[in-house]
Length: 90
View 1 (cartoon, rainbow, N blue to C red):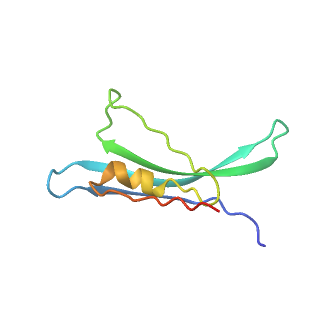
View 2 (view 1 turned 60 degrees about the horizontal axis):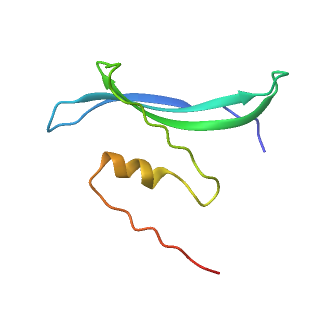
């Protein structure tokens, strides 16, 4: 496996019906231990309104681990779609 390369991308978007401008940012955050050694990486999606408004609420959603991604959870906030989650009992 090759060396880890930190990822970052951002782009401004506009919602055509309302003209709302926002910045989409995808970014790796490298977490280090007390000795400064890289221990883990946290990936994030950010949606920032332009212009920024400090009165707007902030939401954090974290991945629950393998098999439990939050992508559907996040999309549920930005779209009127509904998601059906199946539970499989073994």
